[in-house]
Length: 475
Image 1 (tube, rainbow, N blue to C red):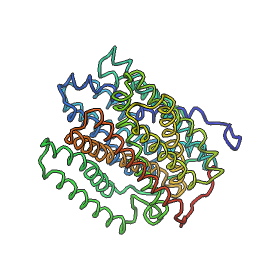
Image 2: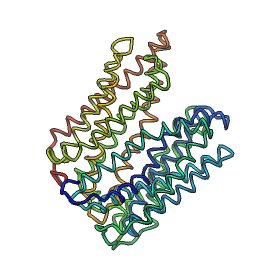
Image 3: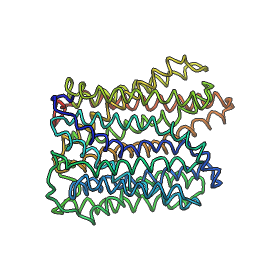
Image 4: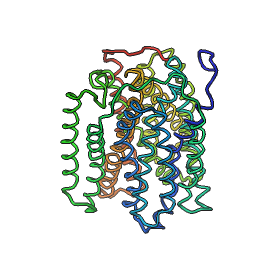
């Protein structure tokens, strides 16, 4: 039973969770990187575009798709995403060359934007506003489970189907979710749309976000002469110009894509910035920890995967407990507690570098579980806060906004943290430090930096007075 003892709408929650699972299951693609590289004769620099094409596409479209759901119905957009996803997985599995695969991955990004932007709104509509926090925590739990299952299933299907298996196994999942969604009755708490969709503003916003998000990746590629040196500047300047045009239209338009509450609420803007920073600093763990576990800890791929899965287990547990934490402490303090836990996990991992040998296994697991728990508590509390901050008719925009901030942090971290690590490691190597010691030192530099940065922001936010509290207690 849910907090108010009403019947649990499990069929709808299962259908939504199953459909949204196609995104966290994409971790399976990381397992297939070696096989994809071999199939298309790609180097490491080229394989990352398989990720970039997908991530930048769905991140840039997330807000526009959320707004579209607010206008024509979240369920329609969600189901359209499932249909698009089925087409995308088929196209990815049938790819015969690198260019085809990149195009199919971009189509998969469109599907993910359609599905994920409206999934949080759908679970709230299904369960009702009074059970908002509970519903969002269950949605986060389903995503955590999918994140665990994706790499495991991916590793198994690659053995029998090759690299394409990481796309084919999600096709029946997508079709099953679509079938279940089509058989569900209309959500009892759905809000009747009373808006119009501003296509030009949505297009401007998507193009601006795409160009700005891809600029760091282009800058990194230009440093290796993979792209012209001028391209990042052109992309960034064009994106900034389109964003300025979009903002001008938003201020004057009768049907803005972003509600005024999203632009004028300083507390909400601060929370969005906090989401970017938590994602930015937290991404150091999936980015660099696997290398540490192999090079310093001496773990093989199987044990490394199990260790990293403990972080997802922490996320699952914290997502379960999040509604109670929000009810007891309020949204703002729950958000700050989650961010503080992530910062503490960063410090714990940075402490690994104080000795040349890897710490005991229990210390590895504790740090990773703490990181996952912090991420889980932060994501549920932050999503709950954003959804509560915006008008009911903007639930799709709220869902898109939470995913946009998270993805922005990850994209920036993928470039900045990897570049910072490489710079620090090369400096130590140039000074005559042994390769293992240089890796150890660079690893510590990244984690001490991210830990101090996030801890400083948490302390600043903790003492900063809350100018506007939308809801001090969750549901």
